[in-house]
Length: 417
Image (cartoon, rainbow, N blue to C red):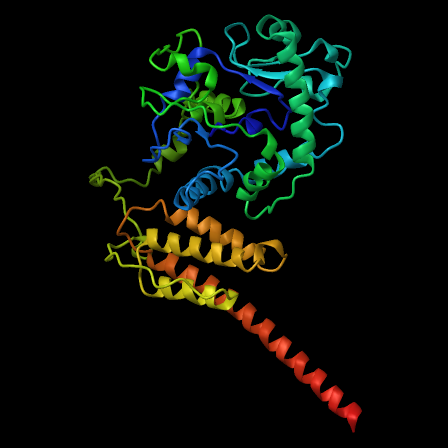
């Protein structure tokens, strides 16, 4: 699973296959680890995150670790992309490999950074899929010939069957849009008969073992060729229109100074005896409002987790914020609160889904903060206000429920009399 989520790069276009050249594979396999995880079956790097779809053989502590990494680094930042992906998969006319042929995102030397499609699409020139995509070098025909040169007829058929099988499995997959890790959990159950044992080697090498087909290349490194320039994130995000504006701004046209009329020159208000005083230039000071500054706080152990009750979960979070825990601990508290909400099945109901999503957002933000830094005063006030609003809504629900029970009781008593 690439961290630069390919679904976004394709502008919601379907892609059945991805082909990686050796230099692209090396770039991914040698990227820096983002965790201290030593399990060779679990890859967590800056360029690629890969975990087994079946986690049943992992310890509970490993599952918790993997879940946290995926939620923070994959599912939460890319929530909209995952939801759009599932929406497209569920469409009846999507991923019809027998009708459209294969669509392949390629880094092959001959088709670098292109989508290669089947000749079956030649008759549909008005197909929006064939329109150019920013960031790609084009959409070209020739995938049938490319795959025939690379794969055996049996593999070719197997891949097509697997695409149909995965389309059917994910089209009927139930998941919680607030808790996207449920995609992995439920896919593991749906595809249980298809899961394979881990092939990752137990031997540590100079790079990660992403694919089984590259196991024999563990100690071979291929450098990125000069003819294929890698774009920075800034270049990818920058729109062509923005670039053109910048170029025109770099060479501005300066109008010529209009000469002052003679009549005005004679009545010049500046007296010749007045000296021109040059004010000293001060460097612009960089400053932060005090209410936005973080102060160092003493690290302390979080209080015991709340009871499985929505109101007590909100009160637990309020207590942690009021007692000036460091931001990383506050992030952990939001994680605890979110998981507690899930235990009572709140995430499967419409009520409080907004709160659960916001708790995930705050957890994602604060667990990445530097250890020992407290909340800035303004941020603390804003969070407490939000929690007070949540608690007020709970209390309003309790009040209305109590009034309904009292009214029902009085009505029953009135009927008896």
